[in-house]
Image (cartoon, rainbow over all chains, first blue to last red; front, side, top):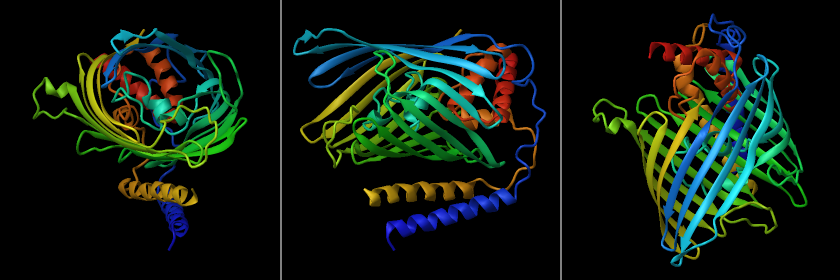
Amino acid sequence: MNLRSVFHLLLILLVATVLTVAQNQPDPTGTGNVSPNLEKGAPPIPIITGGIALNTSFDPHETVIGPVVAPIILVPLGRHALIESEFEAKSEVVHTGGSFEPVTLEKGVEYAQLDLFLGKYLTLVAGRYATPFAIYKERLDARWIRNLPAEPLIFGVGDNSSNGGMLRGALPLSSGAQLTYSGYFSALANNQFAGSERQTGLRTGLFFPGPRFEAAFSFNRRLGAERFNNYGADFTWNARSVPIDIRSEALISEAAGYGYWVEAAYRLSSSRFSKWLRRSQAVVRGEQYFGPRVLMDTGLEMPEGDANRIFTGWNYWLTDSVRAGVAYGRQFGAEDNHNIWTLGISYRFVR
Amino acid sequence: MKASLYFLLSVFLLSLVWAGSLAGAPQPDKAPDGEEVYKANCTRCHNTPPALNQRQARVVVSHMRVRANLTARDANAVMHYLVESARSN
């Protein structure tokens, strides 16, 4: 039996499972008496939130100090629309060969979007938005959220924003399962601070609130001068019995390469740990990347060659909003192997 | 390429079937538990936010409704939980 047959068998099994579960569920759209309600009560107000971070990484050849500021502005327009925008400015101070290189400053609009809540399960997004390819860009990229300072090796494929439109939301299949979806189209824009590529794609998955598990599949087609497809998969699982979070992404792309990462984070929240330790988290991430089989100018920032990397880190919350972290990684590349040490601190704010 | 893609899709589907088996017995129709919805959706990515009043919570939850693909019902439950948590603290 080849992989294609296995895939078809699993697809049939999945459809059968979903149908069986759905038939045994009560109406998931039944109204719950939940108050306060988004549709009622005091009107919402504009908010400024976001994060500030400072990371310093050390490897055998250079030291990089990288401050990042990323404010987010949220402006509600009544109860059915929201304008949200994130601006990010990051600098790099590089010390190598006994001297400092010129300081670099990157700035840009991560997103500036209008969200229209068209229904319980559907939101229309227009403007500039983070491209929903896998999960890292949309959900984990913020410095105060990511468990390790370094982005995964395959992050280059998803690290972009789109200018266009998107439909997204979640559909309850039953009280124990939801279908999540995002479909988008982006136009070409050459703006210095808000550029985008012509591309289209979707991300769809199943989320099971009970076991706190989500698995999703992403498709992205680049429609620029070079046309190619990227396929991704991601899953997250928050175990109930132990305070561990597991996340993973995989990438398959003839033009961008192949790879995956798996990360586990264990919160030492159990009462058997001391009060000091209970504010900390241990993290480990393993990842592999294999270069593309077809050489083309994708414009993506990917590793120069095959690479394997393992990271381990420790995060400590000084307060609920301030987190310090230290991480050690070792990268095994085609040309050299080296260590990466990182120290960092991040601050999350809401005003 | 095709073999890799089918492998990826097979792993994806297998994980869904496995998770579906963990979903357990059907729950009676009732208002969602805000704390449970919060833990299932929000703490997957981040820790507890600072205390928010109702007007702030309404906006933050609308933002997260888009980002995390929440249904309106679950977003209401999370907002209720955040406001009640802030009051009790």
